[in-house]
Length: 389
Image (cartoon, rainbow, N blue to C red):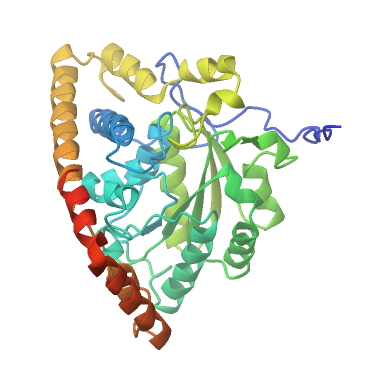
């Protein structure tokens, strides 16, 4: 007999709903709960959201063509990621999951480097310190503890609360709603609160932890969980890039000043399946997906731009702007296709040599055994396969 699902407690949902500045119809309205950023480059925000979507679309195509083993799509979550990324200071550190392609883009990573992990060409793909953007984390919730540990280091390095805007540093860590059910995440919340750490937890509540809806994970909304640990929680419309930017900017500023952690819930939706290995039609009703597709983050910003041109502007954006975006999208697609296929076949010894600083004797024995196995003829075959990709 199927288990009866618990219903949320009465009054758990905020009376006014998530904070929203930009409606699905592209109408810009203030929200008294949060200050609208005074000056925002909406044209740049739209550009990056559009390019990130094309990155995602092209990566899915590459996976379907056999060029990638897997790809976790972000479609529908562009506003949450780009908005949050625009709030970062250069010195801030980011700890992603495996779906933050939009944040990686805004931090200046070459998107081809993202493909290496899913092609099996690299074990990471980039130096986290070059762009202040950590490696993707496939273990659900693990990155929250990494972020908290980094936050502890920032406090001990005295780069929090000094009043120097070029020096004070915060941590922005991303997680999905499914990670809230992990012990690591709740432990991270506990430590961040107890030590008043400069960590902003940005939860993209895309409604589904693979096939498990949020309703079976918690009796209260995501943002409300922060109160149980003793720090602020705020819920924003995750398809509204302005709300995501404003909430993250405020939370990061508070963290840098020594005000402690914040939990941001970006209420959004994963339009595509969890990954290209998943079939979301087996567990999600199509009507639900259609309903969220009508709240598309790019379309609402496009509607606003064509009507007004941006915050404080009166003239609409012309078609030449969008034509230029399409040209950039095509250039990006060509770069991704060529870059993906040019990724080198990794050396067979790489995973052995880069696991420990000093390779243990047992691992040396395994490497020797593996090398002998490949030398028997399988190495040549593997190189031929790699060359034809």
